Image (cartoon, rainbow, N blue to C red; front, side, top):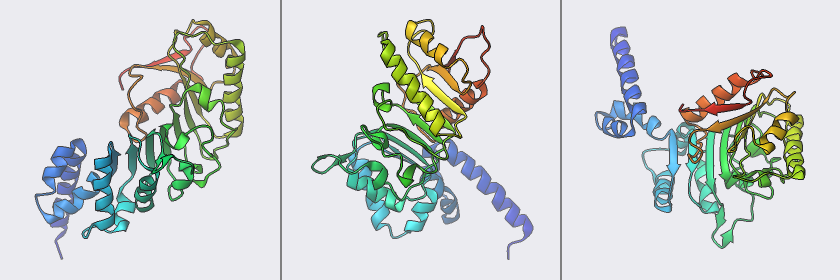
Length: 292
């Protein structure tokens, strides 16, 4: 048996190698060549977060998942924790990936689900029935209108939900109740328009309905793109003046994809949560999130 000193040295080496691998993927790819032992430390890190940008990437990943002779399905279900789908991925392939990578905790879907014959008819939330993610960020994808099907078991453990669909879509969804939801971000951008009174009422009632149904929400953030003194934003302020959980915010990188697993997204949530209840009568009601 190795001595305690030898075990301690290996533990320290492992921390050093894993820290270097997490810092930069290219470094991780070089480190797996050092030895079989180091490879066993680093490979789980390489598979921890998977980005699917294009069909060729998906084909290669599926081939690895389904034909690997060195890694079992248990390896992928255990170590793949975050998945980002960033192109119009065929629905059947989404199902093939997630049926094996069933331990995904963070999911980002920025795409329009497609079947081989055209737009998908089966709701993606049911295709993803093997998953129980905690953090979800979506532009369409699993939140495709007109009905995301929030009653699906897929949504039952979501705590952090970032909705990038336009307000006209999320206000039209049937009322939903997510039992674990604590943090919600909604898109409330509308360019240079001044919204009609009936539109403002529609939006405010939709937000209030979500707050009533999702009883554990601590943060409900509305991302805006207009000045806070514009008529529409001022009217929304007034409607939520007594609701400390509702935060209006502006982000410095409005077109950057908000990845559910990312350090940037975690920092945004931390910033929003720290602002809950922190706006005095004379303070700006808009939180400006600068570089995080």
